[in-house]
Image 1: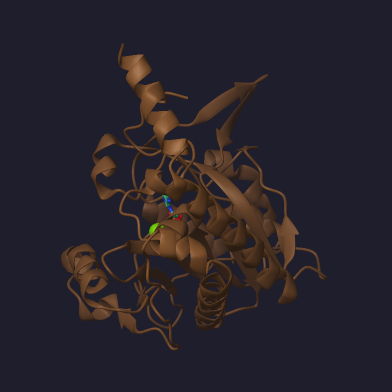
Image 2: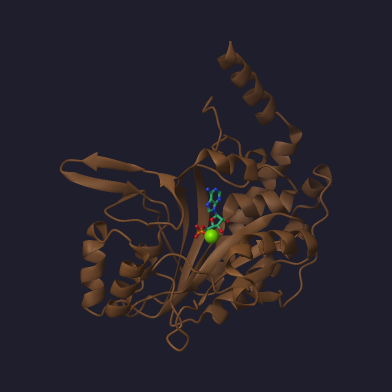
Length: 312
Ligand code: AMP
Ligand code: MG
């Protein structure tokens, strides 16, 4: 019985005219995210789903590993390390991937309306870039995307009764150095509700691969961007650790398991990693903000948000 309620809900959802409007916007969004990157000299890589190592993340999730032969492999939580590895060749300077990520988030994340068990990142990395270069690229990208969606999807926005904010450069930048550590999350939530522009927050203590400022120990050359109107986190980015000794020190500090990273560390030790910076945009969260929806599953044909029944 419960099963047929799930099926009925699914059929209602996929037949809702709003979902068709959302899918039309998604078409334009995916096409233009990729166009903008390709036109700016990025090479597109294919996504990976199984690897010996993946992003250790800075929050707890249920494990997502599979055994193949005698190897334990991880389902991709992000392609951070593969982005770095892909920049090793001399002639590859900018890469991006439309990358499915599996993160078996804990149940309490359901209430955010922003968390899925699988989602996609528009994930990119630029050799020799600084975090400021990446933040500038993001501003340009968002202004381009919002302009073009306004132009190409005006009918759909009308169906959704959504008025897109008019974005203007530069987006405000805040630093956590101005905020007590245990108040950072609440402060960002408050700003997300109050501001009418996307904004950056810099200097966040998290995974070992985000670069510690060599001139200012315990400050980090990274950032998050948040959406206004209470839509919360949009993306995370930063400069990367690429020097073997720094990586090892940060891994020890963070208590990260080194074992799966064995080959990544060997490559780092060979001095092959480059200075780089990049970011990963949550695609469904961007679509959700554009469409003015409060629950992430509302912009997805198939519900994979935390709390899903996996009806289909
Ligand atoms: P992260 O590097 O962990 O911040 O992930 C990059 C971006 O992906 C985030 O800023 C979010 O926009 C998005 N994201 C992360 N986790 C999830 C999730 N469980 N469901 C949907 N989107 C997510
Ligand atoms: Mg993040």
